[in-house]
Length: 103
Image 1 (cartoon, helix red, strand yellow):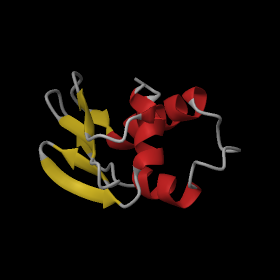
Image 2 (image 1 turned 90 degrees about the vertical axis):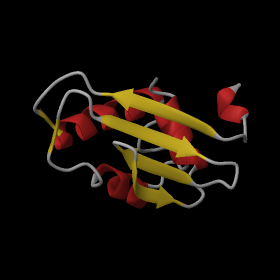
Image 3 (image 1 turned 45 degrees about the horizontal axis):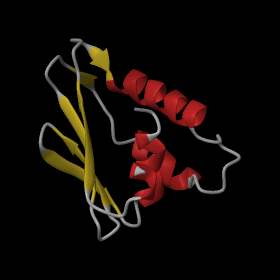
Image 4 (image 1 turned 180 degrees about the vertical axis):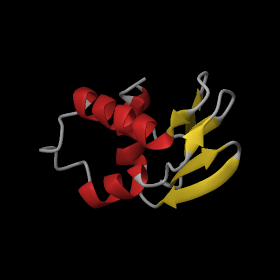
């Protein structure tokens, strides 16, 4: 039902581990997205946008860090890190839904 909804939604991930490399977390998320979606062969996954999404995560995460994904009814998806906007994706519903399938 959520995947069909066009209302504003958000997903929040609170990190519980100190010294977690951001690239490792991004790789784990990528694997989860590919397992829970049709994979790279899926025409709905925009490869360029997905690589851009992965490149957002740099450095090392600490326990208590928060990553949020917000989808608005205007069809934008915003990635937030510790409450600050990192990147906004226009027409981000497909990307938001791909991430939602991992939860």
